[in-house]
Image (cartoon, rainbow, N blue to C red; front, side):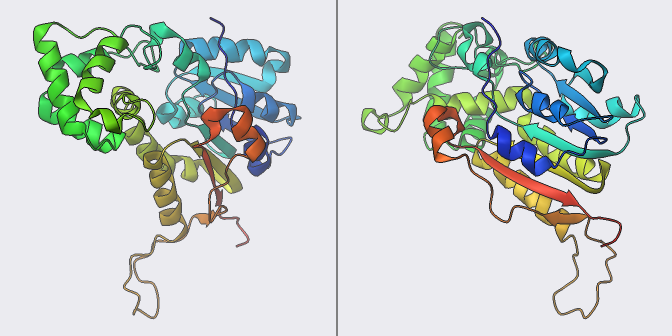
Length: 313
């Protein structure tokens, strides 16, 4: 299957990035290169570092961005390593950073990747195919209490305890290897009348994918670094697809805008923590009604933007 991915809020995200022709930019989740292509089109003397941990995505992006030649550098890596990797190129400061945290259409629709409950395939779910931890390992090796915790916290699943219990019972009979085998255990754990609100496996699959790829911890650990990497006036744009991601982005952006920890009654700040910039999006930007109609996977997307404090402010 060819790598296919519809870049969500393509126009909105690139516009918010305010690309300068001579600027330096990072697309930390390049995917098929949709956002990266539009950034490169706006560069004249500038440069884009396009990064993705998925080998198939890097290959697709290389083909998509080939016409831009030396304007773009492709890197296969997790965006959490961006600071270290870009320092090797002398790119310690950037004019803009983009993160699109969505799972690509290719990853969801390719059964062998194991991301989707709609197709039968090996329980994999690794964004980086070189990663050691797979969904199969989590499902078959994690203790019931830990399965319950991650399904409840990362999947926000009300039946987490019962699902974990059914998974453990099923794996005691035989090792669970495929997505459809996992579907059966989840379906058995959820009352029939509660299965009408979407697919019963949706939240559990989300939780396993997040755990497998350390998605939330990587995001939380990277955002402060990215803001520090921005030149004055530079922007970071982050597109999230569920409330857990969005909450992290919103919180980190707000803390960088107003980091002061002094009690409100203090007449002046004494903690010494200065604002690093401003939150551009008081409320997140949402996909247009037309985009949501054309691409149902865009419906949960939210775009938040932070701008680094300029030297004159």
